Image (cartoon, rainbow, N blue to C red; front, top):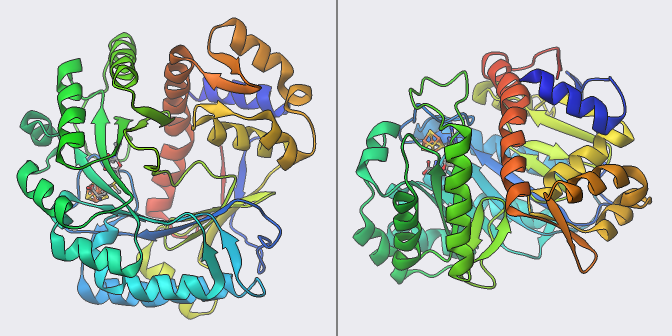
Length: 417
Ligand SMILES: C[S@@+](CC[C@H](N)C(=O)[O-])C[C@H]1O[C@@H](n2cnc3c(N)ncnc32)[C@H](O)[C@@H]1O
Ligand code: SF4
């Protein structure tokens, strides 16, 4: 597996140099000049812990959550005050964990953000279905949230049982969602669960749009090595058939595909904390991507709070990119939107995309993975499947390894991928 990713990395970065993450960070982060900067805030608390989930999270406790949010607000001020005046940013996303559990403190966090940043494209936040109650939704809306994403996983009880989650009560969700409106109401589903059929997925998507979603995300199940999940991954051929059929169905219905895994039935409905050129992340496990570096905060909640209380950034690891590494990073995340605009690449790097990756793009076109549409490279169904297929390797070779270490060590010395 790591053979595939090592080879691809060496080919695309034109170097055998691995990705090297070191336990260091810059005291001053340079984001002042960056366009299209996004913000991410991680809230690592959940009412119950699901055994398949790889994210950085702990059981919710009132006191710990309060201490964490006090530290989070300090981190926002530490980083935000590195820029004079207010920096324009696109969006702010709250991920987790289950950020809706901190609904009462959301106003404090957003006020801190607003002191340093001007958000132009709204605020998104993740909820567990248990949080979808009118009074919680109202609090979120009053705090400024404009997009919500609800972790449904499946409406089918057989899959909730496999995943160790409770059945979702569609009627109560529908009632709450009809009482408080948001620009985007997204619902997350997990795809490629054992023996999952086209009808299982199609019915889930139909139900989602019927009860008030205007956007759905269908994430392929990933079997992380450090989770205790017993769910087995679906064979490749079956996965491809399922992905193609469900994509065809969404396209026939006229749903807009705005990333590899997401479809919407409304023009303004968008939910993506990933497809941005640069972002600043706050909170434990949050990542920051700048022009020449990528950094990751510690995964340990207590260590995060202690570091902030010492007036230090909670950064655990930093990678300083070579130019080619940054290009690969740029292309990987831009391709997540299923489109790559050569003009965006040239604006970012000051060099034409064709000059840097002309052969690879030609090959991808010959293999039927991408096509040109009005000067923009667009992924075909085949390309989307292979992107997904490769992303699975990447996730298991890189993210699984890194997160596996960071769950155990708050500040590892060095990681090479
Ligand atoms: C932070 S959770 C969403 C909000 C809330 N905590 C919840 O679970 O309802 C983010 C999403 O990641 C997805 N996810 C978690 N573990 C996964 C795995 N092993 N493979 C694929 N998707 C996964 C789920 O769809 C989940 O809704
Ligand atoms: S899936 Fe959601 S609720 Fe479950 S552990 Fe992960 S973040 Fe928490």
